[in-house]
Image (cartoon, rainbow, N blue to C red; front, side):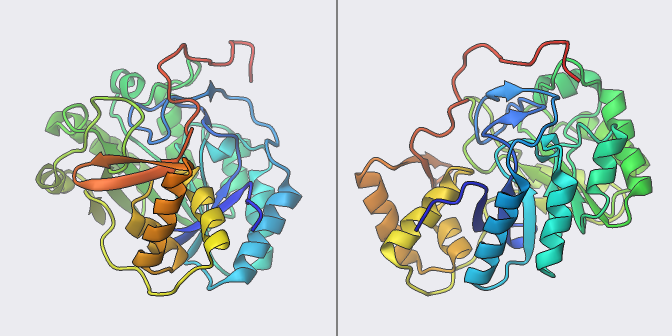
Length: 331
């Protein structure tokens, strides 16, 4: 089976069920360099929007994936960087909606929602999930490490404006890092900002997959449950890896290897994650992962009692070298 360049999964999601991922930008091309990112250091921190991937090819891959198996619960525009950096993300959303009734979700850090053209591009999405991980400028720069030209008040105002304009669903993700942003006074600031944004629901999440930097840890489940009360409206708490057993079907070896590597290039997964996303038996997936490890195609990291698999050599931006942000002349 040929490798997909822009589409991966479906992957199991704690929030979206089985999610077919659509990747619009090169690995770790992002507006942020978050300390908790599972893909490591940002290879290129930028504000430049362009057509990083051809829209026609993206839509062909989506159509092919959808025709090959059971419909996912969502088609999710996300992947290995900030998707709103793709200048034609609106065309991608509309193109997907023209070929399927599966709802389209967009996972974004929200950094570019202060731009009218970005808000307009996301207007047709069925669900948008932006992030708010800090309550003030200092925490924003410490945790999200944004491009130097991004200012926290403008980012927050972009979230508020988008909420007013967007007719679809808006869920606000708040990722808490243990010992850094899980303190009550810190989360109270975030909750105050969230009240002004008025999302349909707030989702408290924490570090589950191995982060690209040492020393970053998850917030404790009991702490997250206690912090839930600070937020208005519906609040979901996701404090651990996805639970549940995958369906029992056996994949073809070559096809399974291609699908597994497509997935692991974008995100670390447990064997159960892979099995659930591919609707394959845990035994069959375990055998394929063992074979891929023997070939040196995947590596494994043990964290909190779980084995996390990722494609060998990924991510290329995980070194602790100099930050390669675009210069001040960019727009």
